Each structure stands twice: as structure tokens, then as C-alpha cells.
Length: 275
Image (cartoon, rainbow, N blue to C red; front, side, top):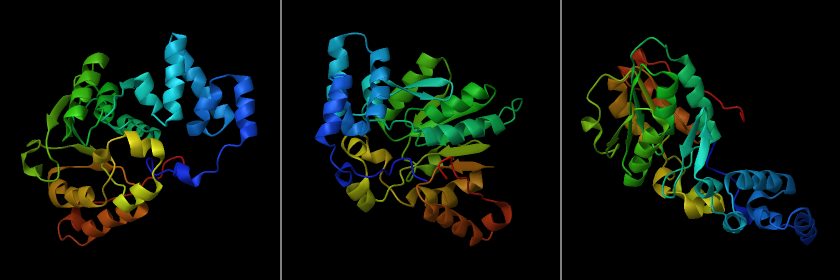
């Protein structure tokens, strides 16, 4: 399962002139949206979203023109739904994906409602995961960590706008693990960078490649190695998002080959609704 790896636009067939002509007859702005949406039905849905969020014809036309250049819709409209929350989105910070929303909601409702848990979210980005967990389980103490100033600023803004108190801290997770959160961790969450550079360059969609931060996207197993070597001794449970099954196997094999971890930890894999 992979939320970020999508077929490159260069791999997709060109939109036929007849489809473009038909789209223009349905609405004059639809052809601008086809570059990213690919079908008239999806373009119509996106146009409805744009017209619901933006008020002036000029802003609507500008938004559609930006979409023709593959500019992310969430950056144009400024928000992305995430469970019961509307998370603010800005350039320079990864846009929350539905797959992350899916497991975060499931996790939130599995947590006991009457227990004051300590929750730590690494690579927090917009803060969507800790904000959702705190919203559903207000008794929890929740902290989000990121290396990016853009991400931390936006996470703080989301916390303030939504009225959900979440602590944010700036750390280099790989190199400053010992300094981060000296308390007992009941639940550790992370959606780390997990797309290998070669795959990112060859196959990632134009929209993601041009406009979303590589810092939050490009990686392989370094964050999973960091999980096993640095965080497992300090946490009671963890949920990490992965890009492919080999990263799951990497974590599992590392745990099984470790004298203490193999005795203490039981690790499973969950597939999302896209299998």
C-alpha cells in the first residue's frame, strides 16, 4: 500500500481532443482540471469543491488554472478533511492522505477513553495524527515532533485554530533520538519518509514531485531502523505507516533477530481498504 507512489503523469495517455471539447461544453473551466483529474466526472467533482470553497469568479478561474499546472488542490483551498477535523494545509508541508486518516481513526477509537496515555507522533507534518488522537481521546497527553520549521509552524496553527492542545517540538529524529521526549511512551506513531529516491524520480506523480516537500517523502528504511534501535526500548506500542511490504519485513526481521525485542514484541501488519 502506498499513499504517495502514484503513476507518473508522463506514463498516462494524452487526453483526446474530443474529451477536451466535450468537457468545455459541460463547463468552460473543466478542460483546465482534466490535466490532473483525467476524467470529466472527477473534474466535475473537483470543480464543485472549488466553487463551494471560493467565492469570486476570478478566484475560481485562478484555482482551475493552477490545477492545470498540477498544483495541489489542498494548497489552493487551504484545508484537507481528516476524520472530524479540517486540517489546514500550506506549501512546504506534506498534505494528509486518506490512508493515514484511515489508520489514525482506527487507532484513536482503539485507545482506552479513561486512561491518561502519553502519545508521541514523529514526522508530525501538519499535526493531523496527534490532533486527531487528542480530539478523540482528550485525556491523552500528545506531542508532535518534526525537523521542519514549516511543519511545526503549521502544526501549531492547526492546534490553535482547532482548539486542540498538542505540544510540538523540533528535533532531528534520526540524530537526536536520545533528546526527544524523556518520558514513558504509551503509543508511538509515525508516517515517515519512505519513497526510495530512484522510485520518486521515476514514478511519483507530477503534483507531488513539483510541489510537496521531498523532506517528508524520500527515504527508505532509515526511520524503520531508528524505530527498532532507538524507540522500541522506550515505547509500549507503535504504529508506523509504510510504503511497501519490504519495509514491514525489515522491521519484523530486525525485531526477531534482536535478543530482547524478539521476546518482548509482537508485530503485525495492517492493510488499508485498498488492500
